[in-house]
Length: 82
Image (cartoon, rainbow, N blue to C red; front, side):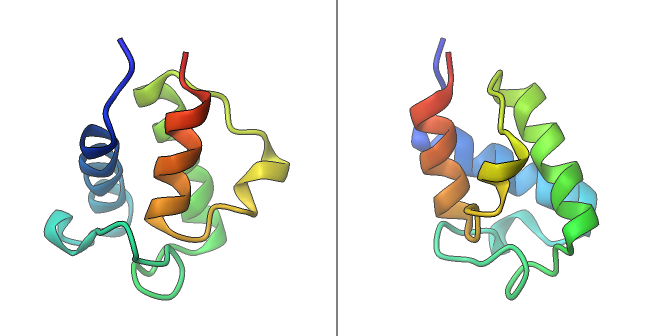
């Protein structure tokens, strides 16, 4: 069953919390992973791998560069989940 937008944002918030220690309530659609959520490039790899597992989606390395905000990642997952 495909995840809803709210479920994806909530899941990404939990992932960012686990990896970067950012409180889940601080993770919002308009937040930048690097500027607002303190996710560096190495941590972003961990976020992507965790999101792939959680939402059953494959995110190629070339596409990761385009995922600047939580909203970008949410929309990507919505479009590509099986």
